Amino acid sequence: MSSELKCLRFVGLCLSGTKSTKSSMAILDYYQEHDKVILSHIYDRISVLDQMSSDDLILQNLNSLDNLSAVFVNAPLQLPKCMRCRLACPGYDLCSEPEILWMKNFYDLESIQKKPHKILSPYTERCAELYWKTGHEEESFVLDHAGGANKASIMFRAMYLNRAFHTDPKMKRDKNHNKDQVVWHQFYPQISMWQWGRSLKVAKSHLRHYSHSVYGKEAREIFLGAIAKKTSLFFYDVEGKKIINDKHSFDALLGALTAFSFYNNEYFKRPKSFPKNEAWPIVPT
Image (tube, rainbow, N blue to C red; front, side, top):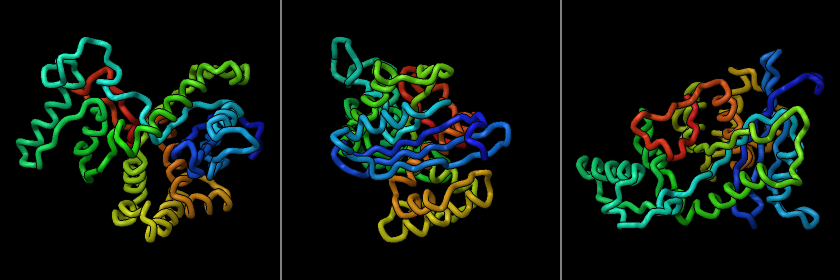
């Protein structure tokens, strides 16, 4: 397919710690005229290169993409409510901010349902992770707190990259595309895997174990075979091998696929009761 044909590009970004070599980026090219989706490239094991930081390398790769539509990242792009708040603090027990009231109500309902009582920590938790803990019809998901030990550093990195992409004067884009129109959203890899996998009729056992150190490779290979057979997605053998062998590259693909679902308006919409100023990560339907 000619590279001169116009396409839209969707990026999935799987971030790890700044000093690790596990970050990956997947690029999907969507040729609207032919209704064809191509996984054009996987940047895997992104690390320092010739004195260029991994962050600068990610930004450079993003900046090189014409017709970029969306970047979906596996990390929060918004701080927990208490860390964004600038009001005089009465303590969260007395707080009347909508996000805090929503989370307190969530924990109250958990207590009524006789689950082990847990204490709210609104400086590390967000409504979205609590919502998707129980908000899925088929499966329960354990999601790290945005400001918890497993996620905080990646959250700060994602927020930095988002800001640098949109504000750094060195980030020049093609004259026919405004980078301010490129949307950034968070996605949850395990939920995107479940949603896409169920639509492809992949066995639940494979969906649950796709990141397992022993069974994960087989699960990822089965998923990739199913999506190649049942959708218009095309990928080259070298990219397919990266995805099967490397969980982080696979998660980057899930991010790009979620971005494509978002473009097609195939995602769960924000519930009316969900706080309007709280981030709503994208989950495909």
